[in-house]
Structure formats: C-alpha cells, structure tokens
Length: 370
Image (tube, rainbow, N blue to C red; front, side):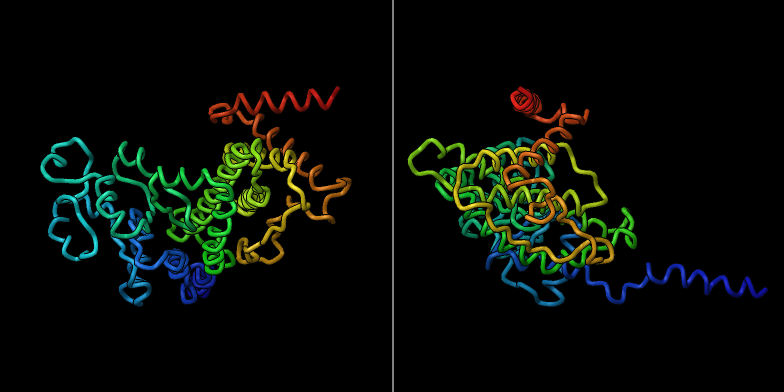
C-alpha cells in the first residue's frame, strides 16, 4: 500500500524537470531574435506556424515592433482572404488571394507570389523578408528575385540589383559586417539558451528552434563563402585586387562550429564540400597581414548551457595545433580532412561538383607524393 501511495510522488519527481515551463522563454527569445534584426517599417511574410504565432504574440500582446507588417502567406491562399485585406492597409494586394499562376483561381482574380512582391517592393523600399517556404512553384519569382540570408529569415531582393552589388569590390566584406550585426542580435537571444535536446524531443516545437538556429547559421556561412570566392575569382586577375580572406575565414569558422555544436543532426555532405573549398581558398590566398581576426559572437552553448562544451576545437590557435608551424599548414590539413571525408561518403556523389572536387583532390595529393 505504501508503494502504491509513493507512485505519484515518484512520477512527479521523474517528470517535474521536463514539465516545468515556469522559466521557459524560448519562444519569446526566438521572436525577438527575428524582430530585432528587421529594419523599420519592413514587410515580413511568414509561412511557418511557430514563427507566425511567436511573432504575432509579441506584436499584438506585448506591443513589440508595431512598425513591422507581418502577414501569413498560407492564410492569403484562401478565398476568404479577400474579406481580410482591409486589416493590412499598408499592403497592396494585386488580386483576391494568393494562388498558383496559370490556374482557374488565378484567371478568376487570384495573384501569384511574384505579383504580390512586384506590387509591394517599392512600397516597402525593398525591405521585404520571408520566413518559411512558398506554397506554390513560381518561376517568375525565381527568375526575378533572390532570397539572401538575414539572421533567422531571408531578405527578398531583385536579382538584377543583387548582381550589380555583387559585381563591386568589397561586397563580401560589406555583407559579412552587416550580417554579423544581425547575428549578434540572434546570438544574444539564443546561442546560450538553445532548447535542451535532453528536455525537448524531436516532436516538440522547442526543438525546431534549435534546428532553425543551425540551419540559418549554416546558410549565412555558405552564402558568405560563395560571394567571397566569386569576388576573389572576379578580381584576382585585375589591377584592383579585392580582400576577401576575412570573409572566407569567418565562413569556415561558422561551418566548423555548426558541425561540432549541432550534436543532433549529422552534417550533410555539402557542408564538408564547402569547408574544404574554404580551406583551399585560405591556402591559396596571397593577401598580406597574417591570419584575419575572427570575432566569436557566440556564447557558451551546448546542452544545458554547459560552458565546458567547446564547439571551437577545430579552429586555429597558436597553442592547440601540435606539430603545425603556421595557419596555412593547418588550413592545408583541414582541407585534406574535409574533402577526404566528403569523397568517402556515398551520398556525396549526388552533390553538384563532386567530380571536380575529386579531380582537384587527387591532383594535389599526387603532386605532393612526387
């Protein structure tokens, strides 16, 4: 009888730490980490339930960032949306509701996503951001616009303007500094307070915050690496040589941290490929001034905020690289490790550029063995 009476106490002890949400601020911090990175009077298009409920609560209940117009993309796809348009007096709706192009609903007065952006891009001075994915394929949108990583969301920009900006010397450094400022905000809210994987299972909404954090961290690093390498290739033969080493180094550091810090999801082969590409360009760099300063904006993270979990163990320091004389030798070793790991994965064969990576990797190793 005593054992039976003790069962509720035992269950309470076992589950209290998991069920106790009295100090949980995950969704509030998540919403603020997005809102505080957006420019004044932006249009924020949301197509993700967790993002929508978190953002709307902070705006409607706590009065945070009322200057930002938030709209739910999926809600816009219903016929009844026509009766709700009056709630958004700043937005121009080019039809009754959002739908797929070249369909009966479109012919009857609906509008595509590209038509919606076209109607509002000047109204919001190109400060239009999106979270989540589109409901329908939109070739016209893909042709005209590009989505650039911006903290935990993406900024919608005209491709012609984006290409013009990227054609200028210093674009990668400009993006690096701007995006670093946005991520200081994100990090301040989330990096030391990511939902614990031991407390929140894969079925919980809290776990998705953790997933989003690493997905967008990786997206920023990948985009930064891409624009830096392309800028280097564009200007390396010209008279006005550009300086992109800081961007390449920072991109590599973020990818390294994403791999070692995100202990839930294994890194995709594309990440190994990109890391190898970053290290190869570090080795080939002829920029003077030594190894660039890398600002570590992330707080001690990890499960349960354990400060002893070091997510930077692969990064260059003068102390932790035994037998390595300088940072270029270290970068060479890391290049060999990452592209070697990439080429060993069967799943890598489906990654674009696999054959080119293999040719370069084999050529370098063969030359080194001579």
